[in-house]
Length: 315
Ligand code: 6CS
Image (cartoon, rainbow, N blue to C red; front, top):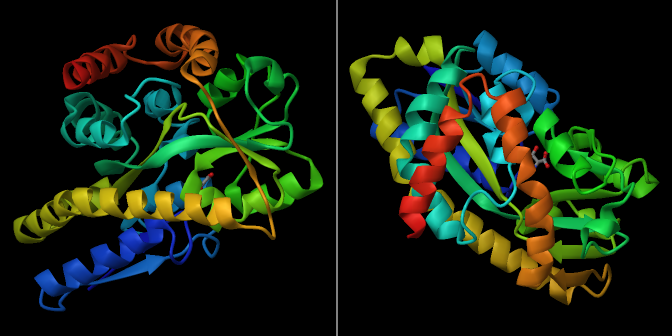
């Protein structure tokens, strides 16, 4: 049998190499009985189109960012909250591995839409790019900030004074180049590999959030797997948590070096101090109340539980 696995990234990028590695492992474990076919971003439409393809069972598996299910699985927008996860990417990954709030409660919300998140993993801390040089909230005033398909991301940047809008990353380079959007957030590897630094003069090391991706399966398909195959899938996904942590870590540090040394497209790299970050954190905190009252369908219960898990992991 062949299982299709769609990703939101292209050759060499973390999600795509994840899918290739997953494919190799599944093929090996099944003695070649199962072939996983990884799909690069672009061929099957936008990220939002891809979520529909997974839901419809047109593809069996997907690497998906919760930011693109923001208008559907409201609760998944929890990942849009700035300064929620610890600054340490490693500790964040440990929380993502073990969190019951995410792996049980949030998973159940996704399964109502026929999407089963089998694992949550970080693609690294997110940074900002722009031409203005983002150092304090005032720098965001009126900035046309690009975000994913999530009302809570829009709210988060409105709180800084920006004018955010949702866009597929397929249109992001051109948008930044033409000035239809003026800033964006992403992990360093992606900023450099997607060449956003060519059309943005500065990158701010803000670490305001982590980029979280999910390994997902169509729920009906997954539930219909034999016990043996389900175990192979689950074990492979679990083993790959440490593998993908190393991969994103390597890519993020290598691309930071590349960006520093890129004389053809120089980028000013601005590192925020803790005081500067605190000014953003202060504006970001009230968004949690908005999440509880206007976004969450379970009165913020998942956020409360996740917050306890984060506290326990960082004590
Ligand atoms: O900015 C985005 O939308 C894209 N960023 C990453 C790191 N992966 C895929 C996603 O579509």
